[in-house]
Image (cartoon, rainbow, N blue to C red; front, side, top):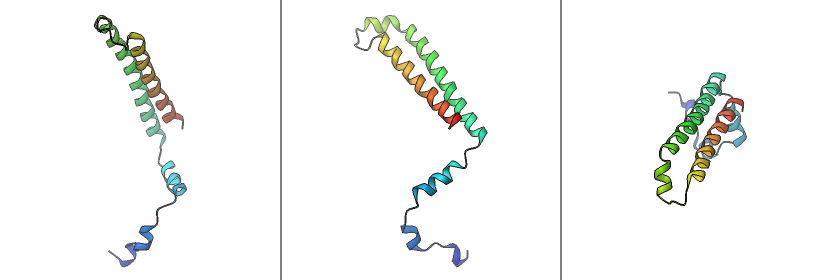
Length: 96
């Protein structure tokens, strides 16, 4: 290992500029990475919506009998909101 390869302590004490870090981070996002990542989020959104609604309908009698303040409407809204959030992340990943 050459003596020139070792950084000096004064250089290590200074934090890197945020703009430089963001420029470096933007360049390594290939098309296939965006397609796979976006597709994964969109698939997870669809799965969580349909699976969640199916489980909600299967447990409908138990939920209504429990007299919980979180009824069917709020639970369905939570599942839909979660799925929409995942779908948004997938679209953001695809087109950012």
